[in-house]
Image 1 (cartoon, rainbow, N blue to C red):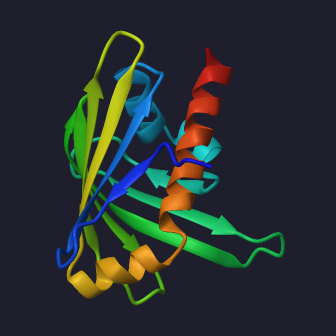
Image 2: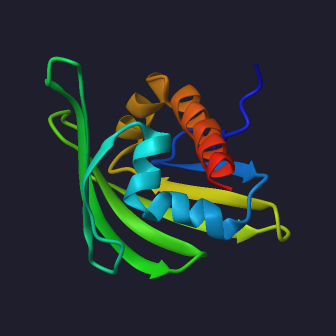
Length: 155
């Protein structure tokens, strides 16, 4: 199965770019990244905190059925331009991975189509390469597929 979400990672660089075209307006893709109830639906994480403002913090968490935390991440939102872009820090707790910096751009292609471009900068090439060894590309593609489904269900 072809992945609609593309992960571009040049050898020897401590960054990567993620691109995805959506059959959705840029404003709805932006909304799916900044409204807690939508984030929970497509990401599958519980949103413990989400302050959709400059210098606002966020915390996401996933627990197993027994209540054990499987995943927890946090960060700060910066430079929010509604329906266009934002920057966030991203820290996966209890993993040993350093904080990463993520730039999100929501590009309008037409009234009903858009492109999401995420540019992620890691502390080192080694950290980026460790992330890429995980099922990272498949996971983000599945999440983006779910995002499309959730937004279409809302319309």
